[in-house]
Amino acid sequence: MFEKILIANRGEIALRIIRTCREMGIKTVAVYSTADRESLHVRFADEAVCIGPPSSAESYLSIPRIMAAVEITNADAVHPGYGFLAENADFAEVCTEYGIKFIGPTPEMIRKMGDKITAKDTMIKAGVPVVPGSDGLLGSVEEGMKLAEDMGYPVMLKATAGGGGKGMRIVWSAEEFEPAWDSARQEAGAAFGNDGIYIEKFIEEPRHIEIQIAGDQFGKVCHLSERDCSIQRRHQKLVEESPSPFVDDDLRHRMGAAAIKAGEAIRYEGVGTVEFLVDKYKNFYFMEMNTRIQVEHTVTEEVINYDLIKEQIKIAAGIKISGINYFPEMHAIECRINAEDPYNDFRPNPGKITSFHSSKGHGVRVDTHVYAGYIVPPYYDSMIAKLICRAQTREECIVKMQRALEEFIVEGIATTVPLHKKLMQSEAFKKGDFHTGFLNTFEY
Image 1 (cartoon, rainbow, N blue to C red):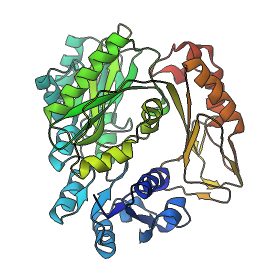
Image 2 (image 1 turned 90 degrees about the horizontal axis):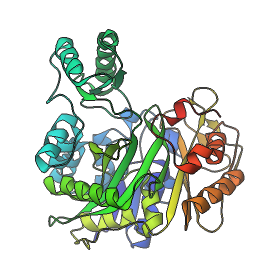
Image 3 (image 1 turned 120 degrees about the horizontal axis):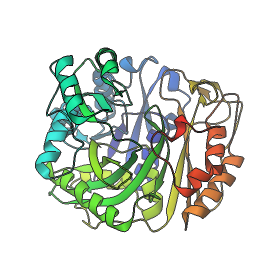
Image 4 (image 1 turned 90 degrees about the vertical axis):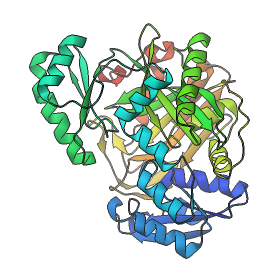
């Protein structure tokens, strides 16, 4: 087992990893930018190293600075968390070259799943259903328009190196195609340094369902059931739950089996997520694979009583997994609390938190790195907390979440708490009658 793990991340996920490491008897190193000097992950780690100014490029995305922190603290492993360098194959490769264990999959696995065209080809060969679309990158706007006519509108243009909704455009007609093509390529090039675009059939009113998987270094892969992540704004998840109110036992078993196939196809090592789009007829299609821990891993932990961070670390240390497929025993819902104004087009709202009270009680969990007096910096993702509720049934879980949201107090900045309160009171949400476009027409 590792003696000291450096956490190449910040905020709530860094603090989450520190807690598990402490329970496992592993020392931790926090890295931080000057903007995060007062963050709780810095306070609770055994050691902390400042790696640069607020800019991510000069701190959390700087491989040389993070590796320097590894060297001066004698850490023998690095946990990347999510975001930043978590799916950066070059970073994983550098760690390996210096004899430092990267807690996650190999660089080759990250590269295979990081490029969406390669990932799609891999899934087709593995027998996993994929959304109909181009065989590779589009060579020209004319080629794209021809394929769109053959498949039938609407279609989706997607950046091959995309993520977070960047480089994605829905095209409803031939007249819209060329402007959408130009816009998607420009955005993808600016965001990822790669303007490669491919095309897929757009699935109307889809569910976003993902399957949590775990794979060890010996080729064994298991699944830990599904999460429904369909409540989104601009392709960013806001609410996640498990089990999905839409998924029945038959679909759960079929999707779980497909996710295992996906993991086995690349001999996946670590914990990861296979994401699917599911149409109204319960046909499911591979969308992408995230080769890291997810923000919403907490939902799975609550319904199967399973520490996924601990499992990540054990796998990286060469310990075999049980190989058992897990299914939800309870119901859990997570609301992401973001420093955003939902009544002003979700504009980020950084600043000083003047008052903070997190919810408590049976079946209520809060993962956060903030407190009263903390200044939310404007440089990073706007999520400041995750509120997770667990109960025997979905109905009980919604009621518990309503109560927990009433108790969740953040003053000094705007947050998404008011939106979540309205959502939990919505009859459509209570019935499980929603899809990824639900918030586009939801009145709050």
